[in-house]
Length: 387
Image (cartoon, rainbow, N blue to C red; front, side, top):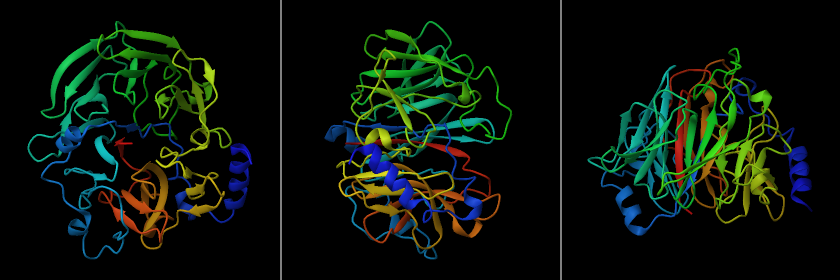
C-alpha cells in the first residue's frame, strides 16, 4: 500500500471516533505560526553544557493533586516547570528541549534558555529567535520585522557575538539548518504577528515573498523568490527545513498534502516518504515507525504505525485533551499542546505543554503549568530536538 493510500484509509477510519469535545474544535487550530522543531547534532560536551545543575525531575514538581504524572520509561531526562503558565526553569524531555519561547499579549516578548546561573529563560527584545544545533548560539532578528540583520547570540551568557547584514529589511523568520552551517530566512513585504488572530481582518501587505539561504561562516545570503499562497495573506507563512536539511517545506493547510517541498533554490520537489504526509509538527518518530497525524478538522490527533497502518487516538484519560503533537521526545513519547478537559466546551479554556506516552496507557506528564482562561495559548514554544 502506498503512503497516500495508507493516509486516506487511516483518515477515513478515525473520522468518526476521533471527535474532540464540541468546544475544542476552535482551539484545535491549524495555525501557520510555526512550532519550529530543530534537529540537533550535539556533542557530549554541548549536551553537558545544556543540562544545568538546576534540572528538576517532574515527579518532585507536579502538585500532589495532579493525577496525570507519567510513570512510563523515557530515554533521557525530564525537566519541567508545571507550576508556571510560562516556564522559568528549563523544560526538556528525552531528545527535546524548550530552547526559547515567545509570549504575546498582544505584543510579543521573547525568552531564551541560557546556561549561565540557574539555566533558566532570559527575556530579550527580539522579533524572532531560533537556536543552533549545538545549543550554544541563537539566531535572532531585531524587534521590528521584517528585519535587515540577523544577530548571533551566545546562549551561555545571552550576549551578542556578531551581526549578519542581509542588505535589505525582509527577514520575517530565521531557522538553523540541521548541520548548523546555514540559516533559512523567510522573507516578507510585511510580517504578521506571531499569533495573529484568525478572526481578524487580513492585511494584504502581510505576504511572503520568498527566502534566503545564509552561509553562517561567511555571512553570504542567496535570495530566491517563492511567493506565499494567496490564501495565506494576513497569516505567517514561514518555511522550514526537512529532517536531513536537503529540502525546505511549507505548511499547505491541506489534509491530503499538508506539506509542499522545495529544493534550496525554490524548485518544487517530492517530499520524503511518510514525513511529508504529516500535518503535525512532530511528524515521523525518530525510529521511523510512527507518524503523528491530526485527522480532520475538529478531530483528535492520532499516531499511525507506518508498518501496519494501525492507529492510536491521542485521547488520554483524566484532565487533558490533546490538541497538537509538537515533537517526539523519543520513539514512544510526544510533546504536545493539551487543553483542560473541564473547560473544553467553553469559548475560553486553559492550555499547557505535556508529555504523553503513545505506546502504553497514554499517561500524561505536565511540562508547564496551565495558562489563564483564553481562546488559545498565548505563547509559542521553540523546541530543539537531538537525533
